Amino acid sequence: MKKNPQVFAQQELKDIVAKVSKLIVLPQGEEPTLATVTDPEKLKSQPFFANAQKGDKILIYTNAKKAFLYNPAGNRLVEVAPLNIGNPEQPQVKSP
Image 1 (cartoon, one colour):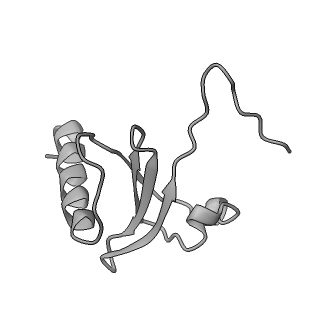
Image 2 (cartoon, rainbow, N blue to C red):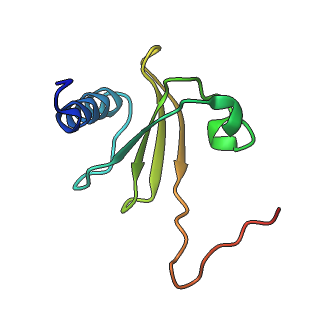
């Protein structure tokens, strides 16, 4: 698997989805995007990441507009939130 990172990433995604689906009903008919929390301190200002730890996994379902924060070490769901993706025709502007 180390020779083919794409195969490793696909297997990791399947494993995480299988584990999280035992804790909560996940959206069907869509393959999520998987991300990993690498520096939780940089994310603490965002409520979704308030309890995030290094190594936590984020499953992002863009069509279902949901995000799931999962802690693999404790096998627990840390947070679930609606996903707010800006409309390309109406870009969202963040205030400083």
